[in-house]
Image 1 (cartoon, rainbow, N blue to C red):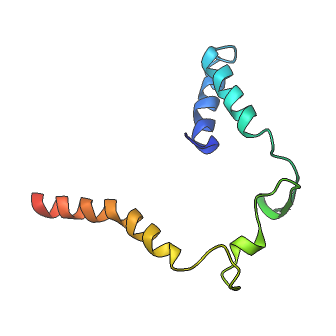
Image 2 (spheres, rainbow, N blue to C red; image 1 turned 45 degrees about the vertical axis):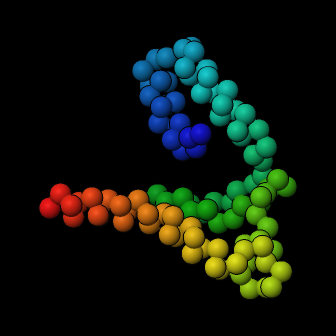
Length: 105
């Protein structure tokens, strides 16, 4: 599934082109509404010389858990060695691309 970041340009395009009442816009709206159902909270912003900076955020439904986000304690849910497999998997497509390019050259 695409993230909402990928859907917003399509949604904006539909609205900009006058397709507010189109089934496509309504379907995207339903998806966005459903995925944002539990999004609630407060965001503090700093406005300075035309910039907007997020200064803090707080939500009763936050998924952030400092016990999981830390690598400092032994009770942490995350182990630094977990990153090894993730990095290898992400790098695989780049290695294959480089090998393919070498074969063509």
